[in-house]
Each structure stands twice: as C-alpha cells, then as structure tokens.
Image (cartoon, rainbow, N blue to C red; front, side, top):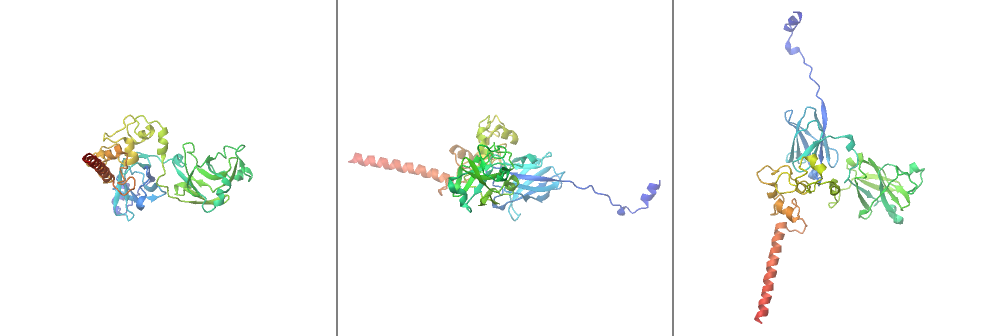
Length: 379
C-alpha cells in the first residue's frame, strides 16, 4: 500500500528509466574477387543494418582489400554498398542476408559472396600473396652476381653472432631461404607466396652466393602487408624501408594459381573446397544451369554461379553482353575472350568488329583468287 501511495504521489515524467547499453561488434568486408577491383576509383563502402531501422555506417578502408566498421551486435541482416568517393552514387550492392554470428563478408563478385569468421589464424601470409624487393636505390645489393632470396621469419645475422650464414650448417628453423626467380624490371623483384610458405607472419629478403647468406633487408610483417606495404626497398647493406607497389596487371594474384593442384570433381575450374565454401555443386560444373561453368563465372565474368540471372532481369547470364562488344557471355566463354573487356588484345578493335573484319578479309581473298583464275583461263 505504501508503494502504491508513493507512485501515485510522484510525477511520472520525473522517472528516468535506465537504457540497456548497446553492445557493438566489428564487421569486416573483404574484396575476395580475382581482380581485387572493389577499391578502384576510390570507392567507398557503406554497411546498412537492415535489422535496426536501416541505419548506415561508412566503413574504414584498412588496406587494399579490407574494410571495417562497428555495428550493434543485434545487427543481423546486412547490405554492403559500393559508392562513389563523394558518397552520392551507388555502384554495386551486396545483399548478404543473415550473418548468423559471422563477422566478415567475402565479396566474390559484383553482387555476391559469403559470410565467414574473421579469426586470428587468418593474420598471416597466404598462398598467392605478392611481395616485392626493390634494390633500385642501393644497386650494390645486386653486385658480385649474387642471387636474391626470401626467408619467412625475422631472423637476421644477429642470431649468428653478426656473421654471414653458412647454408650448409645453418639452423633451418631460422634460415630456410627460397630463391626469387622473377625480376620484373631492373632492380625490382617479385615473389608469390606458395602454399608451403603460408602461415608465416614475417619475412626478410636476402642476397647470397649459394653458400652463404650475406645481407638481409628490413622485416616485412603481415600486419605491414595488410596496411598496403607490400614492397621492401633496400637502402643500405642490412636495412631499408617498406613501401607500397602497385601489382603488375599481368601478375597472377590470389589463390587461383594454386587451384590447379587441388581436387576439382566436376572440372569447372573451382576446387571442391572452394565450391563447398560458396555453396556451388561440386558434382555439377554449371550449378545454376545458365550454360556457363561455375569457374568461368567466378574467375572471369564476375557473375553469380548460384543464379541463372545474376541481374535478376529475366536474362540469362549466358546471354548478357556486359562489355557491349557484340558477344554474349556464352560466346566469350566459347571463344576464350574476356567477357568484361571489349578489346581483349588491346588492338583498338572490338571483338565483334574484329570477327567481321576476318570474314571480310576471307571474302576479299576468295574473290581475288577467283579473279586471278578467271584471267588465266581468259588468256
């Protein structure tokens, strides 16, 4: 009775109800496409929380392929939008559905991908990562016909009392260098991380003569690599700096180079483990039945191998002409041309025009031959 009397005598407007503190979780968006194009044109990524009133969050770009932002832990249905730098125009959209406790979304194409968990075990070099060595500012590193190597840990000569390391007697736990065979241009080398190297978190470049390791570069960590610092620039005998270097257009980046060595039951160009991850059928090379192999859709067409019509406009992916060169996706696949590039060989001619030009040349040649035969008979 006393409690009721107290409440009646109070102004209810004076009662302040404590709000439950909102808990947040970090969401990650990863460009897992073959070309890693999402960052192009200084694109901005926006996460939309469809669970809580369509609240939007502009994501922070961590490196070339990774964006992050914090959202309420209750956020379940998320959409990611790729927008223009001024944030006024939407270019691409990934409607991801429910994340089911996952925290990272891997974009596999222009409008599709899959959820996963961003775990500490992912914070290491992966097969397919490209790293560079630049000795252009200290060319003496290349003297004496030395060879360039990479060693996947941060060991230096300090662990060997400051002396050169004899490869014959070296501690393999510290010194197990891999040869670098590719010199992209004068004084610039590149190395593609192999499955055997995967899992390492640090590396140094070395120069040696097959018997001894002489000099080493600065350390490149995977954390540095994630920040876009993918190149070690040598500036003195045993040191240097870390810089960013744009990948060459013809370099094979990502895991796809190694897929040829993995089990591919249906022969569609995608290993079984990857198909299980994205939800395609490991026993059917064309999961969505659009006439295009799953591998072609993922690696070359950037279309959804799970949808007959990626654009959902009633037109099969096989009948689309994305690059507007007069050839459908299916024709591009059969001819082995790039479905996203109207001039595959960069000769200034679109592919369909080139095809017609070849036919015209054949006709002209045939007419010429007939005319020559006619003249000979007339004589």
